[in-house]
Length: 69
Image (cartoon, rainbow, N blue to C red; front, side, top):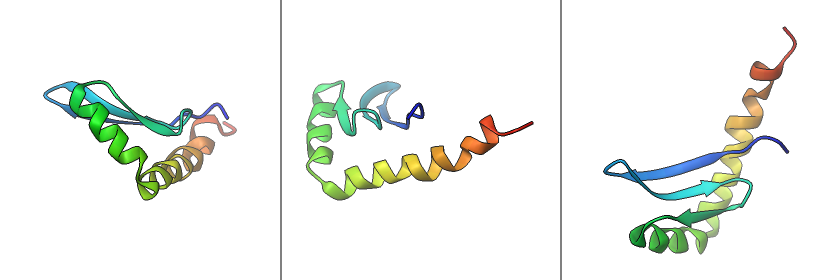
């Protein structure tokens, strides 16, 4: 429960949108980012793919970071 997966989209060093596994959806930070976030949030495959990334990337490697020494 303490593991958080964050995926960010950038353009010209400016974060336009972000997926946060704790929220379970995309959040837009610019006008364009809000439009993209709404589009991605309405696509079930996009949301389920990002949720699967948490399990694939984060939970798979948790034993490496917090395993027994």
